[in-house]
Each structure stands twice: as structure tokens, then as C-alpha cells.
Image (cartoon, rainbow, N blue to C red; front, top):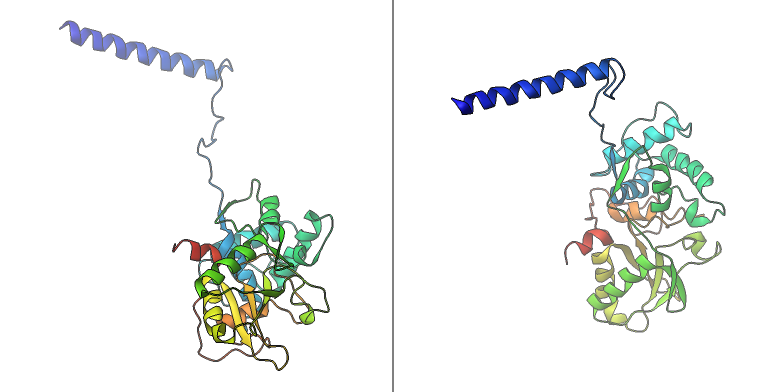
Amino acid sequence: MQKSQGMRIRRRGATAVVATLAAAVSVGLASGPAAGASTATTALPVVNHERLVLAAQLDPSKPDRGLTAGAEASVKTIKGVLRAKGFLVATDTDGHFGRGAMDAWRKWEDQVHADPVAWSTNGLPSLFELNALAPNRFTVSAPVDQGAWVTENAEAVNERTRAMFRRAEALSASDMTITQGRGGADASVGTHLGGGVIDIRVNDNPAKTNARVAALREVGFAAWFRNWAGNEHIHAIAMGDPWVAYGAHRSLCQIYQFRFGGEGGSCSDSTAGTDRPMIWWEQYQCTL
């Protein structure tokens, strides 16, 4: 009986406290949610950086409004922000990162880079540019960090490219030499203006050429052996690298050509029906 009375006393006390707090809020003596206000917080959308960069490297070269697997939601989010900032036309709302989105991203790049260079005006969302746009708009997942400029075989490459190259070198069981990294506009029609693009010597060990190409592709390069008389070499572009730059040759289309079976010599040399598997450095690392 005493236990039951104690329970009734505690319930009455709790009810009184609730009533007192409600009254205090009503007269402004205590804080509480405004009438009709929601106490739930709305989660920001998530932009997958890996997939976004791949879409920006593949979609502009597509003959249609095709989408890049896993990128649609991220592209739509980014395009919504670009539209809100007046960089993109209001009717461009789908998940295709086409020429319009690339040009809109360049406008954003112009705002965030004090000293524009080939790899910061390429229309590809780098992590720095994406993070500058993100606050209060979206969060970033799967970040791609290309790192700083470093030297390998006396050639300028970014840290991500160097790590990929060294891993491919180990997989091919042969020492490889980069003959061209970042170069000027006159080098390979500008395809080496930015990061992620390298040429590799083959005449030091021709028997290893196929193994080298296979190893480069395994770690995330779009790579081809170019049997050009007097200039034989392996040409490789790091997929998913946000520092790959446009040249007069529009080098970004080479990643699209690799995906659909082309040999990277022209932006229109894809092979109908060919569907090469896509892998990039961060994805490869997940397999280790």
C-alpha cells in the first residue's frame, strides 16, 4: 500500500513540473519551440566526390544524356547549387554532367582560385573547389585528393599519380621511366597541361610493354601503347584525377574513349559495343 501511494506522489509531482514548465513558456519565462516549428533537423545531401569526378570526365563526351553509374544523385545536387548561384540554366536538372555543367563549374572555379591555371580551370570538381561550395549545402563523401606536385623521373606529377605509377611498376615487375609528366601547351597538343597524364618509355624493355599496360590499367589508368615510329611510348591518364586538364586535343575525352574501347588517339574512335571495365585508384586500393 505504501509503495502504491509513493508511485502516485511521484506521478503527481512529474505532472506538476510539466504544467509549471508549460506555463513558464507561455509567458516567456522559459524557452521552447515556437508555435508550429519543427525540432527535427534536415540532413544535408551527400555528394560522392569519386563518382562526381568520373561523371565530369565521362558525361561531356557522351552522344546523349547518359548517366554515370552511382553519380546521378551527386550530380543533381551540384547542379542545383550551380543553378541557385546563377551559373547553370534552370532547365538543366538531370544527373548528366554535360558541357553545360562543366562550363558552370568553370565559373565557380574562377571565383575560388586567385591564380587560375590549367588544372584549376578544367571544369572538373577538385576537392578544394567542392569543399568551398559545400558549407550549409551538402556534405562530401569519398574525397579524391590528388596531392601536391612532386617529381618522378625528373617529371612533374601529382602525388596520386606518382603512387599509382609506383604501384603499377611493382605489379609489372619492371622498372618504368616517365618520359613526360606535366608539360606545356606545345607538348602532345596540350594533353599534358594538367595532372594525371604521363608517358612511359618502352624501348628500355619492349618485352614488358603488355605487362606494363595491363598493370597501369589495373591500378586505374586509361593506358595504351602507342606504336608511333620514332616515338613509341605508353600513354596513360589517371581516371578520377580532378587535375586532368583540357588541351587543344580535349584530352578528357580520352577517358571516355577508354571506357568505350577507343585507343585514345581521337575523341571519336570508340568501338561500337565495347565496354571496358572502369576502375580508379581509390577503388583499386579497396581491393588490397
